[in-house]
Image (tube, rainbow, N blue to C red):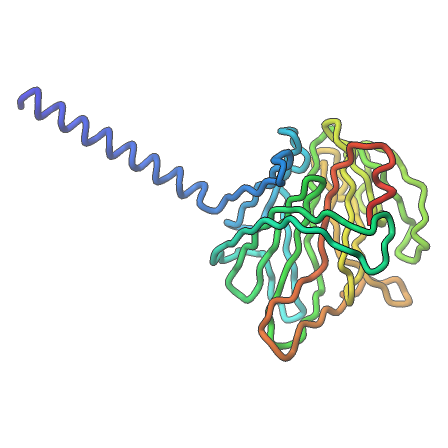
Length: 280
C-alpha cells in the first residue's frame, strides 16, 4: 500500500472521528439554552431534556444551581415531567408602564429578554431575564378547566448560601414573622416559611417572591433538610379547617385555546441596602 493511500485513509478516519465528536457534542447541548438580561450581567441556563431545569449566574457567580420545575394536574397530567420539546421563540421588550395606582413610581421602565419554550401537551414555560431579576411561569391552553394539585418549585442554592428565613409555625399565620438568619444547610427538614425570603450567596442577596396570583394559593417554602442537599423545595399550599393540605383550583379559559398564564416565580438580586422594601 502506497504512502498516499495510507495518508488518505488516516485523513478519512480522522474526519470521521471529528464528525462523530461534533455530532455527539451537538446532541448533548441541543436541549440546553441560555437567556441573558439586557445588560448581560444575569445569565439563565435552561435545559429541557429529561426534565425542565434552569440555573442562574450573576456577574459570572453561581446564584442558583440546576433546579427543576413541574406541575401536576388533578387528572394525573404532569407538566414538565419527561417533556417533549416542540420549539422556542424569543423577544426583547423595552417599554414604559404607567401603573393605575402608583406606589413608588408613576412610570416603570419595563425592560427584559424573554424566551418561551413550547411542549407537547398544550403547555409552555416562559422565562424572563431583567437587569435586576429573573422570572418564569407556566402557560396552559386547555379547553376545559383544570385543577392544580401539586407544583414542583426547587431552589438549589450553593452550599455556602445563607437565608433570612421567615419561619412559620403553621399555615394559619398573619405572615408577619421574625426573619431567622441561618445557613441553608442548617435548616431542619420540614421547617416552613412564607414569602418573601432572602438568600445570601457569593456576595449576592436574592429575594424570592411571586406575583400575578389570582385563583391560586400563595407559595410557601419548606426545607428539604439534610446538610448535604443544600436546597429547599417549595410547593403550593392551601388549607382546610383542619390544616390539611389541599390543592387550589386553577381555571382555564373554557371558550378558547389561547394560552393563559399562571403565577410568576421571581428572583431579584439585591445590590442596594433597603432595596427589598421596594419590591412588590
